[in-house]
Amino acid sequence: MVLVAVFGVALLIAVLLSGLAARTVLSTSLLFLLSGALVSDGFLGLIHITPDSEIVSVTADLALFAVLFTDGMHVSFPKLRRNWKNPARALGLGMPLAMAGMALITHYLVGLDWTTSFLVGAVLAPTDPVFASAIVGRREVPAKLRQLLNVESGINDGLALPVVLILIAAAGPTSGQAHASVGSIALELGLGLVFGIVLPLAVAGLVRLRLLGAEPKLQPLLPLATGIILYGLCHLTHANPYLAAFSAGAVLASVSPEGKTVFEPLGEALAELAKFAALLVFGALLTPQLFGDLSVGGYVAVVLAIMLIRPASLLVSLLGARIERREKLVAAWFGPKGFASVVYGLLVLQAGIPQGEEAYTLIAVCIAFSITAHSSTDVPIARLFRVDDLAGITSEDHTAKPSAVPAPRSAPDQETHHARP
Image (cartoon, rainbow, N blue to C red; front, top):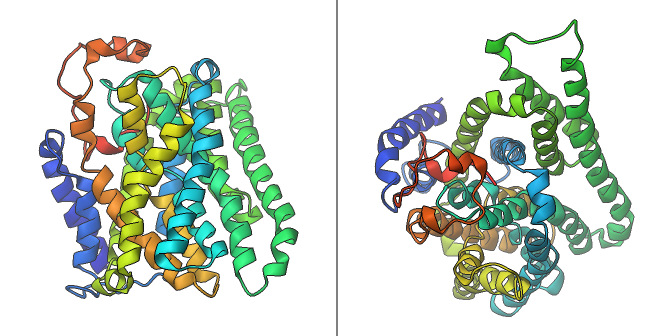
């Protein structure tokens, strides 16, 4: 119950400071991260959480699923068909380059073997939809840039997972099973995609039956019920829950726009709570001992991962793309590491591979640094743009009165607004 009380206090402070956070570099996400660290064994010792604690994997898993589900609802298939090239560049070229670049610096600066180094690269390659939405949720940011970051962060988690699982199998004591696992991984991804498409379509079909229908006050619970069923179904069948969540959100919004509209306030509030809870729990793992276990080379690798590897890989992937230089630079910087990397990092630690603990330490410190850097820079970056600069603004944006001032964050924090392409 101590953890619950700490969460409640942190949530209250976050709400009270959300107005200030909308105007400054103050980040309520960072507040939850620091709160978790403060009450952990490394400082006050009020809560005792270790990487193998079930609450760690459960909260990170739920947070990622919830955010991807609500993020998927903001994907517009017509707009995506018109602007698919930039996200395809980021996923098809930028992501593999980021994996390879991270593997190189991990091998030479940290001393991990090549398989484990590429595993670290695969874990840290995905960008997090929670923190990427800090910038794409603002109306003053050009629509093309928002579309790029939203689609990239929503899909790359599912793309990275099979690579992570294959490399874990290759790095472990049973490395001979790596080839055998490819089929099961493909099955998990396929099932996740199928469930994410079929379940929302089935629910939409039920809604159209004359004998069925939800009261207005209960309508927001219909997408919620769909998400809960999907989450349970994926874990029962070992289907990929992240690919299922993102695709289900996109399909549901496409076949039931009214359902998306009524669910949006509830869905985003629940995603906020899940995200803050996961940040608090992850913060509890960030003890002084963890930071002390990382070598000087490891810290150099962390800085390079954030300041060089992601920016360079995305800029290379966008060479020749029809997007302004300023937008390219913002997209290159905003590649935060988050819950997907937390979940995959825990898989690495729990797999028992020879250099798993060293790899996890590097991953955890990199995530902590990334959350600190990216969640504190959304306001300054958003102020680089002006509403009258927008060319591809959405119809939703047209309803807003133009202003040079960034749109205020909704409680508890605009930085977690989900993308509205």
